[in-house]
Length: 384
Ligand SMILES: Cc1ncc(COP(=O)(O)O)c(C=O)c1O
Image (tube, rainbow, N blue to C red; front, side, top):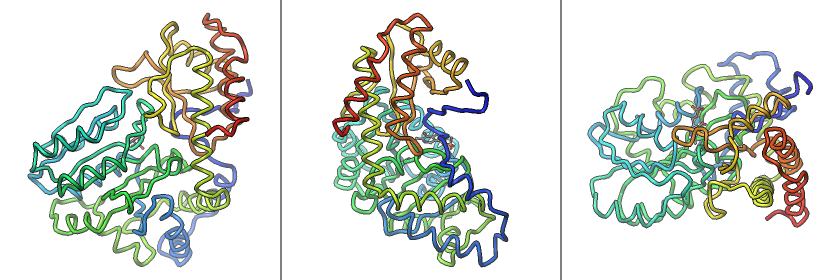
């Protein structure tokens, strides 16, 4: 093991491409100077296709949770009732944020590892007509589920006037999304996942419908006030000091997306998902989710005859490879492999190959090459 060689395969933060790292090394510039305005001016149009929107993408310095809280405090008026779909730890986070702000919150729990069925939400909205906003998680990072956001938007808008607010933190940049066409009202993401940047930025996009609600909301928020970000971005600026170095990096990330082509980026993520799943199937090690519910950005594995944390410890100790464990009640029961952002099918062969060695070392005997071979077959067949 080389001491400074990291194999970072958690679902965020993710590895940063060398060209992005270099871009972030540029000398600092004045945050109110023309150079920063030029930077934002160039970034603005190129961010839109990543979110599938014609709206400006607002950039806020803060982690993904800052984006989630921004959505809550701007879009929910005092006294409003909201519905939060909880498919794992990050749906649960939306509930915690709403509780913190004393919002009347309906919590709709789905078994962890499953995706929400849109018809259940249609039924719920039919029975609870006062709901003003529905919150959902696109990729539920804690389980590796990709929720059917497009179908959810359909039923929510058919059944109610509620805003549809989506946490896309571990999906955007790795999974296709058409915010405007699908009818998402607020879409949030963070920088440190499929956006290939270090942690520190959160992004928020707001539909026209949602702006109407936000503009009449007098809920006090100084830093997370979306109308301030919108007004400033119209002049290629931010209301508070932007994370300038991350903006340098973001410009380069968008150049990489453009060079590869967004469709190719999304197809690469599908391929990595399919290779990972094929490998564990061949190894006879159960996956947490069905193929239909599986996210292209993270895969959760639920072994039934070895301790996932023993595997994770071995991977870290022997190979400096990090995969994630389970959260809340799945702690000690699953491990999760992130395959998003600066990650390619070749990296999947490496992860699986190293996991096979580590499994044998912790006493779970597998025939070496079984998972790698299945992943290679998938790769060779195109992987989709
Ligand atoms: C789906 C999802 N939402 C929200 C967050 C929270 O983001 P942060 O840790 O950047 O605050 C994460 C982070 O893992 C996430 O995966």
